[in-house]
Amino acid sequence: MTEKKSSWGWGVAALYGGFVLFLLILVVYISFQRFEMVEGDYYNEGLKYQQHIDKVNRTMALDSSVVIRYSTSDRALDILFPSTFLPDSIRGTIQLYRPSNSLLDRSYPIDVSGDFRQIVDVDDLVPGLWKVKINWHYGADDYYSEKKIFVPK
Image (tube, rainbow, N blue to C red; front, side):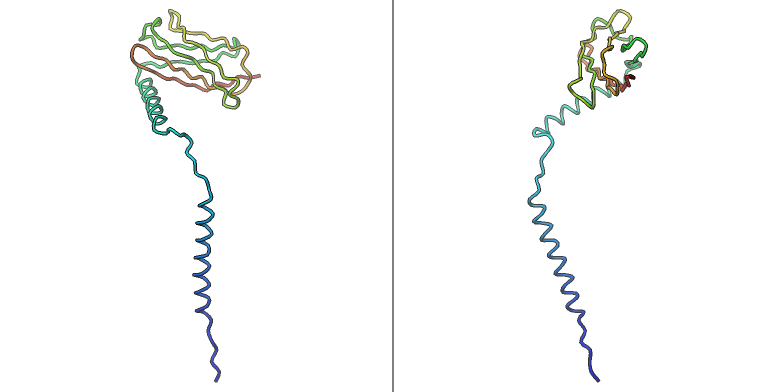
C-alpha cells in the first residue's frame, strides 16, 4: 500500500508566514503616515473651550434666556435680553456666522435699549443658513447664546 504524504504542515506554515508578512507591511505603511494634532497648543485651546462651556452653563442657569427672533418681513433680528439685568450694563458682541463662507461673517456691538431689546438690520444677508452667536457679559460674568436662523430668498 502506498502512503499519501499530507501537506497540511506546509499549509500551516504558509498561513503563519502570510500573517507575519501582512503585519510587517502594515507596520511599514503606518510608519509613513503623518498624524498631526488639529491644534498645536491643545492645552490652552482646551482651557478656552472649558470657559465657553462655563458661559453656556451660566446662561442656561438664568431664569430667562436671550430670545433671538428673525423677522422675514422686516429682515431684521430682534434680540431680547433678560429683564433681570440693567440694559445699560450689558456688553458684548453679536456675531452672524455663515458656516459655508466665512467671508460673509459679520459682527455687531451689543447696544441694548431701555426695553431690553436690540434690533439688528440684516437686510443685506445672503439667503441661507446663519448662526447668531451672542457673547455677552454683565458685571463679572460672561454669557453665551446661539441660534440658527434661515434667511429665505
